[in-house]
Length: 582
Ligand code: SF4
Image 1: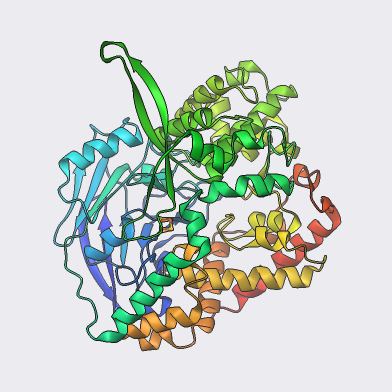
Image 2 (image 1 turned 135 degrees about the horizontal axis):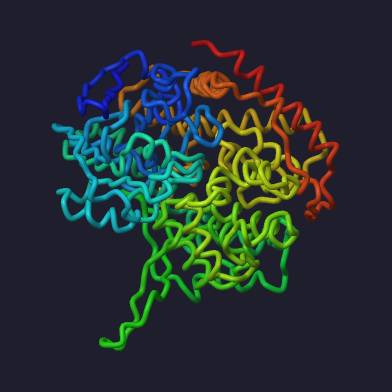
């Protein structure tokens, strides 16, 4: 088995060491490798911001060799819940690490001053970067691009004001338009005083000789570009889902006070975004699909030139839900303007939008007052939300500091817990039913991507907790295999387990290719062991009342079934972790 190459950088001393670890290859890469390294480095008895806690970035064994093996997994101790967390991003991040000769990058310690970490195939530097501290995430990237050589395999990761202030909603902006978004990984970097990481991959990557590899590559490439699903991702992209989900009564509006808005949906649909705001498509490095949709906002009029200044902003289903329908903003221009503010601040778009939605309803109900917020937040009103984004990132008063820790933290302090739309973290945009609510509340990443629960709900299954739990565990195992290979999940129908085995064999990794289903189960359990090691108790998870007040196309949510499923899934997670074989 080939060794895993890990670059460990100590931020307090600036020293680095290269570790070659053959024993870690059994964990594949991505999620599996991240969890294994986390087990080696993390300190369960210390808080999330202890200087010794690691921030880990991993890629997979197929990265650079096959298309859409394009993600990097970031593992860290979450400021949101104090335990094992993962966030995944694409862009050029994975290829840059591959061409720098690395499978993993591990940061430990705390820099004495704000710094930028530079990683190349032959050199590493931790350089003072006080001049970048305080800069927004977009301006910061521009400055680094000007001073860092390389382009094709250069990847720049940085934090905004939210990360500097260690907000649990802080993301890491990656290249242009990608993010390590959720669970506060931006704060994990901010606590280490790392403003940015620039990876420049400059090593050649020899490809396997012979016809087997090239024939396999061509076949996968053809499948990826031929399928209807991939055309959908390219054409309207994930915003295509807005109208069908609204029709299903599964699209959250106004802090989940409604799940459908037939009068307004056409104003924010995928087609409306394409007609009114789409400029172009973009893609992660080496991806032939190009699902990234880039729109524009008009920033200001420049009188001397008699022209407008435009800014490019990428959009997806999730930000449109969180910063659009949840806040009742109903034009692409308003939503993209707010999204641009969120990008600059370095906030996770979903958490920011859902937290602002809670604050708006709390204000309407008199749970909080304008004295707390300093702003007259109102559904549908862009201007105060723009200020709210800045206040969330700056966390400069008691109220905004508390809200930056999460809508549930604010509800704990001020009241309004019943309508805080939090399922482990601020909800993703799927009010599809009981299975999704339980899946996000208990899922390892509290992400809509942990499992396909939103699809399961839409298949109209019978109320059967055993069947639902079986689905959640089986689907999670399949996804863990994919995220351990760092496959883009849009390619999940192409990268079946048989396909992945063929790919590994084409690279001579026959041992890894053997019995992938068993490997998937082992990695699934290992991640849960890490999640539980910091005290996560799935049995203690609660689901706010708002989720029981929802009506979907199947009728009102069944609170008793929701509760039975919550308990059964929690027990199943504990059993799953107990089965781990190191
Ligand atoms: S399909 Fe989209 S997210 Fe996936 S690799 Fe391609 S551009 Fe990136």
